[in-house]
Image (cartoon, rainbow, N blue to C red):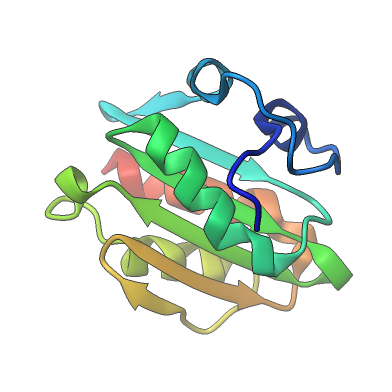
Length: 141
C-alpha cells in the first residue's frame, strides 16, 4: 500500500489510483462529521480491495488526529470493515466493539483486533451503509 492517497476520490466512492499526493489533511477535514463530540471519518469505499482498508484507515487516522475512522469495502459483494480509534479515545470507544456492531449490520458474526484498530466482515455488502450507521449509533450513546 502506498503512503499517499487521493482521499477526495476515495471519499466520493470512486475507484481512483491511490497514489496522488495532495494536501490530504484539508480533504479529510472537509469530509469529517462530528458525532457526540467525536470526529468521524466514515465511508463506503465500494470496490476498493479489502486488503487496502487498514492502510487507508491508518493514513486517514493520521490526518484526522483525534477521532474514529470507519471504512467499508464491498468488493465481490461481501462487506469488509475496518474501524480505527485514535489512542486518546480508546478508553471511551473500543474499535473491536465498534467493528462488531458494524459487522452485525452486514450479517457478520464478530470481528477482532485491538482497541485502536479492528476488522470484520459479512456476507451482505449491500448493507454497507447500515454498517456505517451502526458505528455512528455506537458513538452517539
